[in-house]
Image (cartoon, rainbow, N blue to C red; front, side, top):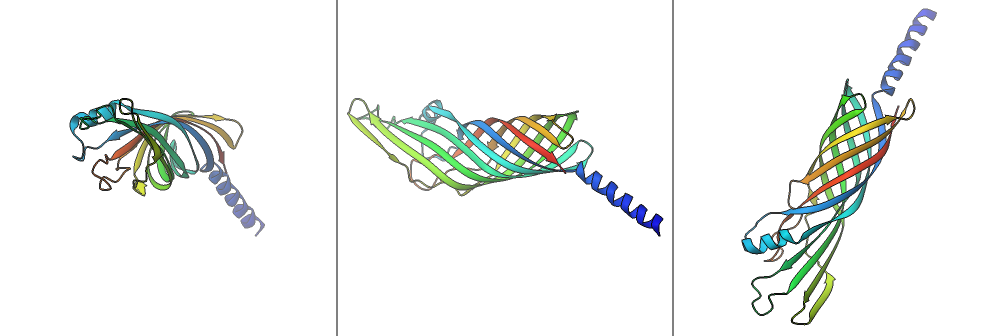
Length: 229
């Protein structure tokens, strides 16, 4: 009887120890830089689209997430994450159709915050060096859009909010290369370079005749802590 109890105790202990190396929880902050690509919906002439693309500038932002990680097999992991994703960029549009005021410019600055659910596959290629590929679902939490119109030759200036609608959800995919530094038996420091591309339109193309669908792009650097159980 004692031998049976001892065997059960050893098996439970061994299983617990195995689980310690398989399940982890982490937190990361991600300074990033966002820009945007455009989808031609026929509302603009090709020359106007080229001008918009030429005068689109990215901007820095900050995102963060909490994630769970599970080791499927040796060197192969799957992670699930929940966080806030920030996209920021601005565009300046000089209309070629305004014959009377050809210098009329419209600058729109975007700052969008999405609640992001993500899933990734991570493969350790050499000791603590890994590559990662993931997909997510971004749900719009808040948008800050500011529009500025100006015309130097006609002495016109306007600044206000742009109330055009944005889609409530987007589908981003991401790739990353990272490194984990072992701090203790259960604690790792994580750093990762990543790139993200949104595969669906961020803005409705039916809200107005001059709305151009946008798909954000992003590069960034993540720094975080991973704790195993």
